[in-house]
Image 1 (tube, rainbow, N blue to C red):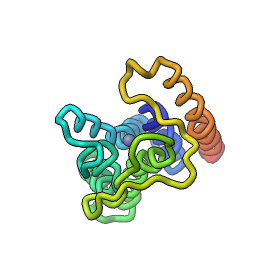
Image 2: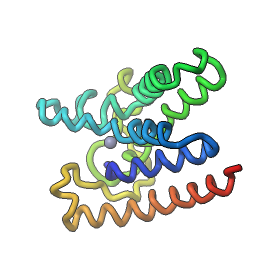
Image 3: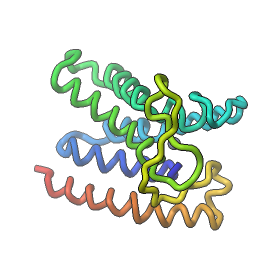
Image 4: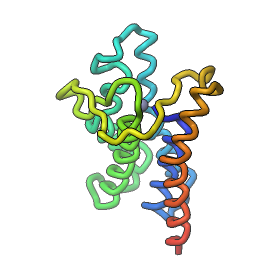
Length: 176
Ligand SMILES: [Zn+2]
């Protein structure tokens, strides 16, 4: 995975870009939650679920299906004021789903680990993109402050943080 912080900055940039005039605290925190939560699946290692299993790391929680499910649940719970299936309801549901899926898209651009099960639970095939410039980052916080962590951070800086900051500036300029 790229680090949780990098998934979070993408969520913030997307939120600011798509909803520039909305109060940001609730929306931003929920977007960060959606972008980071797919890696809760590292718990699978603790339960001896193999990496390659559909419910292993980068499995089900890194799929389109899970992303849409989480986007729907977050919208149902936190935006109850929008009538079900109204235009606004859909726009939030798709926003949170997309932010969740941004996690898997970034993971599929890393140079290590297994690919992501984009189509779980219908297929357990793992996918990477042909373009994988992001150095895979260590899983535990302990390894984060090592040479490996630093190398990963540098590639995330170039491929994730700089584009996200550019998007944030654009979002700021669009703000009325
Ligand atoms: Zn991940």
